[in-house]
Amino acid sequence: MSQDPAPSSAARRAALAAGAAATGGALLAPGLRLVQVAQARSTGEGADPGVRWGMLIDTDRCAKGCSRCVDACASENGFASGIDLRQRPQWIRKIEIKEVRTGREASLPMMCQHCAQPPCVDVCPTGASFKRADGIVLVDRHACIGCRYCVMACPYQARSFVHEPVTGQKPDVPRGKGTVEGCTFCVHKIDRGASPACVQACADEGHRAMVFGDLNDPHSEIAQRLRAEASKAVRPDLALDPGVRYQGI
Amino acid sequence: MDARIRSFLARAIATLAALAWALPALADGSAVLGPEVLIENPGHCIAPAQEMRRNHPDMLKHQRDITVHAGTRGARVSLNACIACHANRSNGSVLGSSRNFCQGCHEFAAVRLDCFECHQSVPDKPGAAATPLAMNRP
Image (cartoon, rainbow over all chains, first blue to last red; front, side):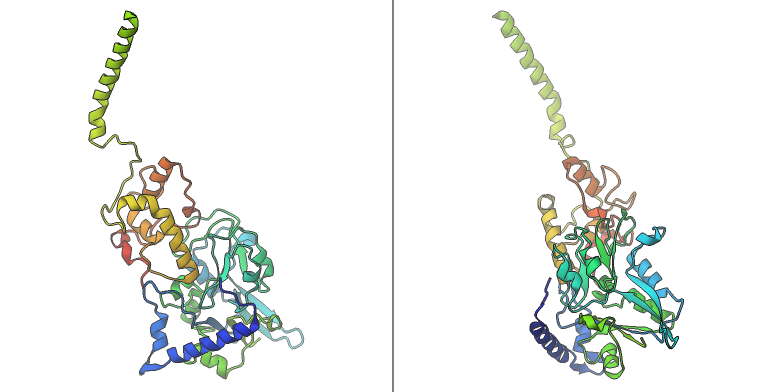
């Protein structure tokens, strides 16, 4: 719901958030920081505006032909199999890319990039597409009318439309016909203090190509790696400030 | 004139007889007009039954905005908690027949039940019905 089109206010908010994260990251005891306590939120507490969830994907570690992240997403979010391929929900997909001149190949997962300036939110006529305080871009399906403007607006093709009646949903992941959906960063798991299903599956597989964490917390693994190593946003020319960054592309 | 009085008296007696037959049935409560809904965990709801009957749509509608937009979890009002507690033991769902909790009442009141076009009508773990308020907590 909160959208700041003015760059100056966005910059000010970023500075405030960084300040909040710095204070939150203070060391309480060896290995125990305030921000970790804040991440496992207590009952009745909303999403923390000081946090910005993000993901770093190392394409050198992402194995060609491996689709464990896609499978984990499907089982976590309860996609029934047997849906026509063209209508299957695609919250995350694997992409193989090749540099034509050098022949260098890379494999990477593509999903909602959870932009700081999300175009899907800008175009939504009902306010169903919104950005949560902690930077996660979601669809409120209670308000979604299925117009699919967001599907058109997203440069990452990250949104899908549900064409058929749905049965067998997961209690934590309601989905239904006539609404648009996309990667939620497994918001129901994050709110419990866990990692998204794809990240967990990638680590279980031993690839560890995906790192998930708070971009605003200077002590988090993702923030430290983003500081130390080179990374890229996909379509940086659009200046959407995506929360998902890639390495090796 | 006599014929009209006779006819009136006959109708009055018939009405009284019908009432005398019907009253005991009404008094024991079993024939009160209403849905016959099976309640699996009586007396454990978050508010008195009268309040829940009248206000549950507003409670859920208010809470869904807080949960989805603000990201607040583990609230007192929760559709998953309703389902966990009120699912019938026979089929494990709040839907299925006119004795199932949600469907029974909504069928009787002729109010369309939209929730379950997206939400799951079966609790995550069958048997978790005893601790509905512990739902959604880490």
